Length: 231
Image (cartoon, rainbow, N blue to C red; front, side):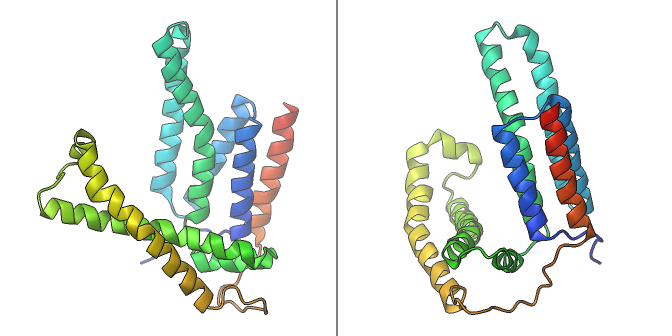
């Protein structure tokens, strides 16, 4: 039985990514940052990804606690380095959360239909489609290579990959690089054969439209950004 969740339009999810990226360049006050991450956590819950959202939210608070614990020892070089890593990763986490939320419960075909409604040029849609489909295929090839290596008793554990870097390069990186070009060409050909670059009007089986929850999300992002900058 499928779990019930609130469906968001890809365009409102895209606005969430833009807002998170904007915060990466122009940070909000600390309290506003906590509110935005809490909003993202609520969006994960509404979108049926409670486990993912909880992991991100716990990691965010661990970064805050680590920063709070290390800040009194900031005059120490090692403590300052680790505190810098904690703060930097905390700043980057909302963007990662927004991107994960955007991809959750949203198919690639829905993204294509939404981008077409936004009148994005086909010259941009085709590379984006190939890029999004490329990484899952790349991960699948990586898993296949790892399974073949384990079957032959080569680098059985993950630690072995770091202990023997030249072996890792020979058995993993080289095959991945050799298949990456063929994979990208195949995906590009498949996209073009399906008529993705056809300039005529396309139809879609997905009902792409902004609903009440999408407007509420966009308004919250705009209002939160304005008041956050005022603070």
